Image (cartoon, rainbow, N blue to C red; front, side, top):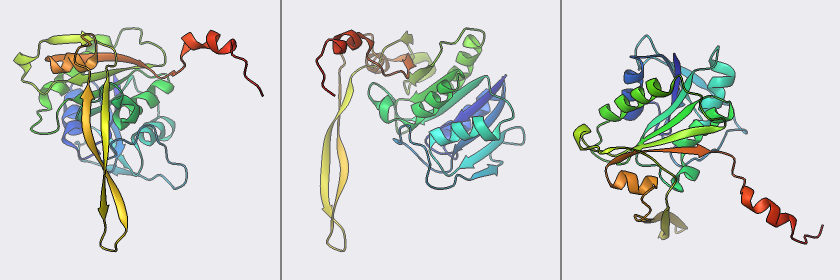
Amino acid sequence: MKILVSNDDGIYAEGIFTLVKELSKIAKVFVVAPDRERSATAHAITMHKPLRAEKVEIFGPEVTAFKINGTPSDCVKLALDALLEEPPDFVISGINRGPNLGTDVIYSGTVSAAIEAAIYGIPAIAASVTAYEEISFEYPAEFIRKLCGSIKNKEFPKDSLLNVNIPNLEREKIKGIMITHLGTRKYKNCFHKRCDPRGKDYFWLAGEVIEDLLDIDSDVWAVKNGYISITPIHFDLTKYELIDTLKTWDIDY
């Protein structure tokens, strides 16, 4: 089995290092990841400057790895089109520091790297731990390894990926796995206005998270209650239920 690993926290992040070490137990692993943190870049790709791929040997001699001066989507696109001799069996993006729940997936570089793989028709998983501090990546990495083993012989859904969020809990405190839908996780944005040393105003984005904790089939509810959440995501954003309705509208041209 061959697995391509990427992320948005950067190639030197602890999450990707732990994941690669664990996946190497079952597969030939390739790493193509950003040279620095690229969180919240969504599905941006680089078109107006050159992309550079620099080979690194931080994962050991058995792992071929490149750091890229681009986004997570760049990394997967470049890997599949230029750096790898043949397509991998899986693309895994992560393990991300912090959750990717609800509408977070729209902004997430972690999820976008997995979406890029899905566009190419390759089974993909986006993996996140739902905490920012004092994280242990060992069990999450072990879970992703087991998940790959569990689904490697399954018929993976077309144009889809699995978005996995793992609570930052000790193994014995994990209650189980829930198959979920994207919940409601929005932000009450607050832009702090500040002044730089030259007297020019600038703004710093802050705010608070607003979550719907009553939707018991959602990814938000699952992780808050100690479950691993697995959400199938389809990158086709068409609202099919509205097609026939729109056809009845009298739209001038």
